[in-house]
Image (cartoon, rainbow, N blue to C red; front, side, top):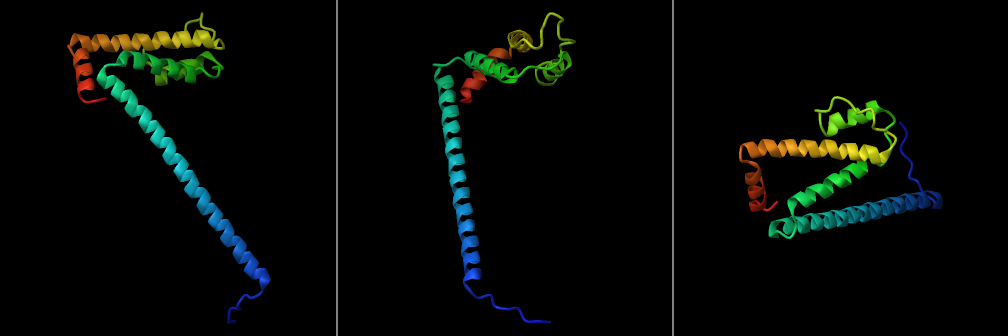
Length: 152
């Protein structure tokens, strides 16, 4: 078996220096990305805490927050067209309500306004049914009282 040779010369030294430089650069890039991610998380955390504090101190109504979240959700999920009634139906049954049986014939699935309106109706109906169910057992007010008391 032959003995390993010692690599000498400028060529090898330059290759090692180049590899070391690339490694250092990758390390700096990874640290920068970690810091950017941490900053993004801090901003999001700050926004969540501010919203929570507005809910706690009563300057913001939870039902208004829910309406904003629903509107934002509907905008996001209707940002692109549904190619067929079946795809829209599948999305709604999977993500919003399994109570619908079909997409009404008058809904044009390529019309974003019509799809948004229909989704809003389905969501409002679901929320109304849930509220009614909680009200029957006196739990709706208890839910909000507990929600605010716990600082959510």
